[in-house]
Image (cartoon, rainbow, N blue to C red):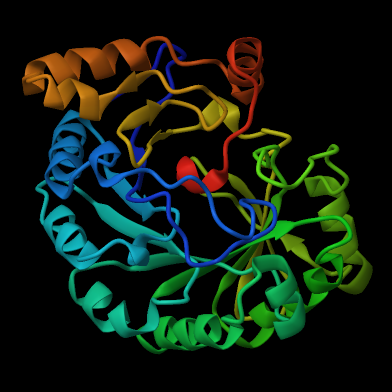
Length: 329
């Protein structure tokens, strides 16, 4: 079993396969996009598969593929299929914005992907366009229908943003009335160095819960699964559930079991850290699996206690000016 220097199990990896995205959400990037990584800067699929294979042998049990938007990278299904076949991997998941996803759903189901996180901040087509700067709401809803028709576990991730989509909180809760989905509200995080000034958290997890209770005072707390990042609830009579993720408040750091690998091969043992080593660079320098494993174990043995410690170290060094698209959000 993999453990860090604080005794926390490490069993979950998020692998970002690209920094590119086909939406332009205002809180993530400017309308004309970012300075995209060149092909040479990205890990190849072979390097990604080698990283996944090694980490699964070391104790990683769950891998979630993220971006950017995974489906903008050519031939992504080849990588997903190869990862799904790794001996010892218990679960393969995916995070997507849904724009290109619908045609892939049958194949995703076939290779064993059971869980998909769908990013969706609003159920209003006009607000969707305002937030994402793209007219793709219908495509996302088509993808949602495809996922549910193939009996996939769907988690809808909505970032709660003051003055932008507060009016969507209750409609999103109501989406779980008739659909077997988990709607998860996420505190906004300060990764907004590209055209959006972050001026502090106005809607923390407690205020989000109070807003939901104003319409559904009967909402009940559920038992949270091990390593859950969300506080989970259900409105009696609703098919789906509600989750609230204290991503900025960072109340779940004490049980965090996840690591991240960025598209360029950077290992992040905390979302808020500055990256602790680069697997791509090591592999291209000829490192053996033994050398890679030693480097990983060393990184895990210096993991920050929580996101606040990681952020303090990062701000002291570079400040926080990344887009979530470049670190697997």
